[in-house]
Length: 110
Length: 287
Image (cartoon, rainbow over all chains, first blue to last red; front, side):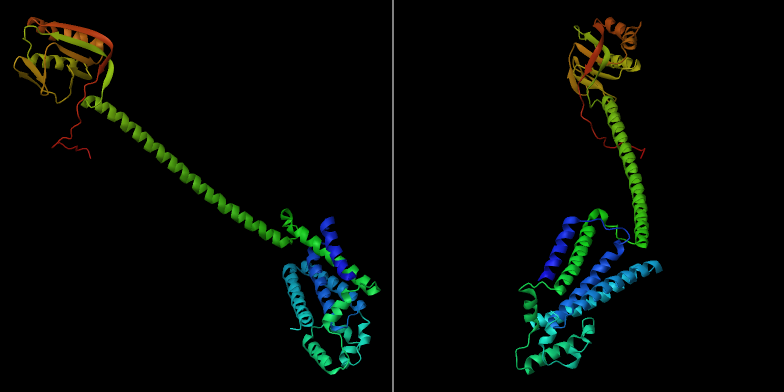
């Protein structure tokens, strides 16, 4: 419950504060958000499976974000940033979908 | 939530051994679902389903370290999400997140597009100019045609005319004036530059003929009676002397006992009209 509250408070704070995104971070923020979403779906699925572990969640969340940003950064340096970020988004999207399918089976039993 | 691992008494080894940490990352959903189904069927005591775990996690709210950490991370996620959505939906900053090569490509496309539009604009302007010129020319041609029609109408007697000129009145009390005398008068006036002539309400044009009809005269078949009143448009300084020269029209008529008076006038109106007639045989050969 507190976790859900945290998410809601974060969205509200982001909408209210509307901070200027620093130019350095700007290309990596969307990828980082998608990576974090993947981690959250994974965590939700683990919770439904009854194997949730907060330490695992924290590590996977942070490492997902960092690795995703790192890949995009590397891609930018190599000149294939657009393609590589597309690839990252595709992979993360597939994972999100499979996790969502597992969650759906738990919640709706279908 | 992690304490729920302990509440499960009998699990397959894969689910309770440390490999559980990996399971969160690996999408092995099918075996997991299968094992859960087995568990639900085989275990005698009521095992928690995913839905029950979800409800337990949500309510009642428990303040634990795990919840707080997850809340913190989710706060970060929500914040980033909202910021990204907000900055992305700013229409003015649509290009802010774009990469350098994308920007270069967009710039090239815009350059090409503006070049194409510029070409198109030039073509259209040229076309407009041509159309304006041609419509100007058409307008000019129309104006000239109208002008010419007016001039020819004066000659053909189809339009009224006005201008300086003279009025000549021939009083013929004895009935001695004949058609050829009037014709002489008309010829003399034409020779002196008369541009429009009417006699007693009959327009005199190129094809006008005069005939004797009893005691009076017919002009183009219209019988006219004395006094014969000529209205003539032309240069009065030329017309009047032309009539008055010695041995000219006036003297000839006065010899026949007729009275002739000639008056100059700054404004003569010749308003007798003739219908425009299409010639039956003669055709323009200029075209």
